[in-house]
Length: 149
Ligand code: UDP
Image 1 (cartoon, rainbow, N blue to C red):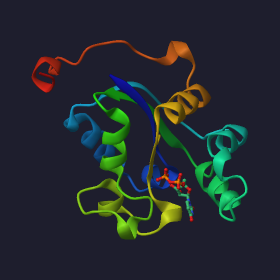
Image 2 (image 1 turned 90 degrees about the vertical axis):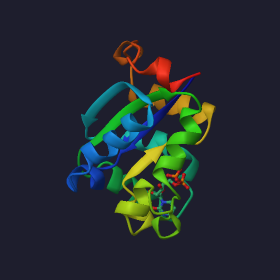
Image 3 (image 1 turned 120 degrees about the vertical axis):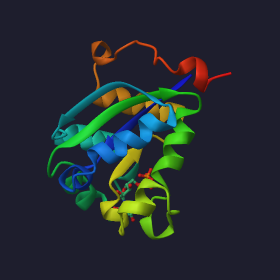
């Protein structure tokens, strides 16, 4: 099993998409093992997006991500990292397939509603930025025997 860090960004919260997004994650069979709503601390946002610190969009990206509450989650399951990236769709919503979150609910890269880690290393790094160890919940979904062979 893999785990990944997922964020419903401030535009997703402001636009009333929390339930829609969480519903898609749950219906896919993935397990949410931690969840919190908060305004992300500026330093945490800068650390989260440190790989982009030299990019021209870095300043506006940080302002956007800390502009209002977001929802942070740890999502677990088989190939959770790849599955969540597929559920979210392409970074640029104009290239995102219909049926993905970005393909269904977004128009611009700078307001693309969701985040999900892109590798095992990023997932562990991002989880450690946004969650303490004791915020994770260990439990089984009742449908796991029908989700996994
Ligand atoms: N971003 C942006 N302008 C760009 C590229 C990226 O505002 O030209 C933002 C966008 O919110 C994106 C985030 O920076 O989701 C991180 O970019 P990355 O390429 O890592 O995409 P992601 O992993 O979120 O799909």
